[in-house]
Image (cartoon, rainbow, N blue to C red):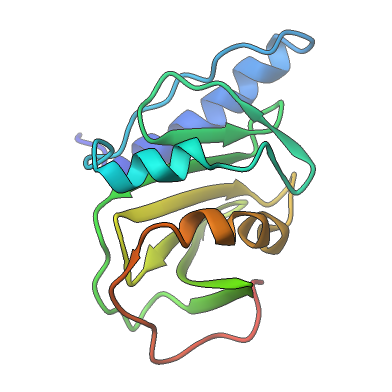
Length: 164
């Protein structure tokens, strides 16, 4: 059975959390897989300018290009260079504004791990958030200026009022 990149990423966030919990007290490098287009120059901008913490979770060192992780245990993974999503009628779109603005498609099918993927941004970025540990809204607000470094290519036509 072949796993999709999203399934691999979700498995990795769960594994990283378990490993981090087992090694509590030791800030180990988080082992993750890069996204398919992680070598895009826009991803370098996202990683280089990533905030040192999001929602009071400190940044962690990772071993994957275009990837940033936060928290110990890992609660947030930012993967730049994922496939750019097309229009959808099944995933709600949320707009996060805080000086800059970014549209996100929210997929909560693997709750408590929520996957937010930028919509109308190139390169596309995926943020996996463990909602049992941190509130998605706080994370996305802290990331909005960093993600705004990518190129805007479109906007959602219908926007949900809440980050859920």
